[in-house]
Each structure stands twice: as C-alpha cells, then as structure tokens.
Image (cartoon, rainbow, N blue to C red):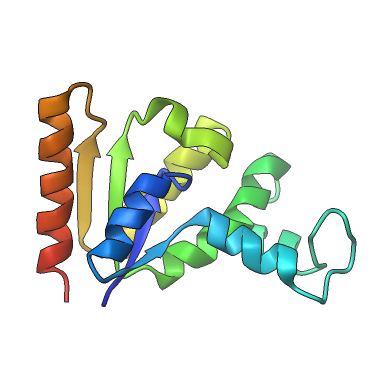
Length: 145
C-alpha cells in the first residue's frame, strides 16, 4: 500500500479511487479533520495551535502571503508523507479551498522535486476522456508497491 497525494486536494472522487485500489489517499480534508478534532487547540474557533504558523514557514518564506503559508501548514506535511502523486492539470472548480494559484504552483513544485512517482493528467472534458482518465489512474495505482 502506497501513500498517494491527490492534487487538487479537494477531489473526493480521486481520493475514493485511490482508496478502492488499496492505497492511502493523502488529502487536505483529512488533515483538517485531524486538526479540528485535536483536543489541544489553543485558539478555538480558529482551530490552530501555536505551531501551525511555524509549519507553514517551513515551506514558504515569511514574506509570502499568510494564506499560502496557512495552506502549506496543512499541505506540506502531506507532501512529505507522500510516496506517489496524482496531479490533475487545470481542474477548474476542483481547486476548491486550495485558494490562490501561487499555492497550487508551490505544491506542484514541491511534489515534483520530492522524486516520487507522479501521474500527470489533464482534466477530462468528455465521456471518452473520462474513461481514459480513470483507466490511467487505475494502471498507475496498480503498478505501485
């Protein structure tokens, strides 16, 4: 079973497909759930500890907008844990809460420089492309250890 980061991070369909293929999908909603249910919250209802802003600084400089650092506090540890990645280019509305494009660019860069197996796909626009899209993902996940 491999730990596979799914990007865009809010794609429940992709994370479900990863899980169905016997791997662990690494997604932002799971990281948010862990943070929101932690009993050590220092500042409810913000659901952050004093360590969260420091985590973001590990991935983005202090002069980077705080929203990017905040997102990277969640996404950065997921990237570190990943053993493989599925990246969908131009996902449109699937980007969801990932926010600005600068965060998306930084995340894709960090994933690519990690050196894990990566499946790059274009978002499908018709039924034939969608079937091919799913088949490529299944083949990629089937080849992972």
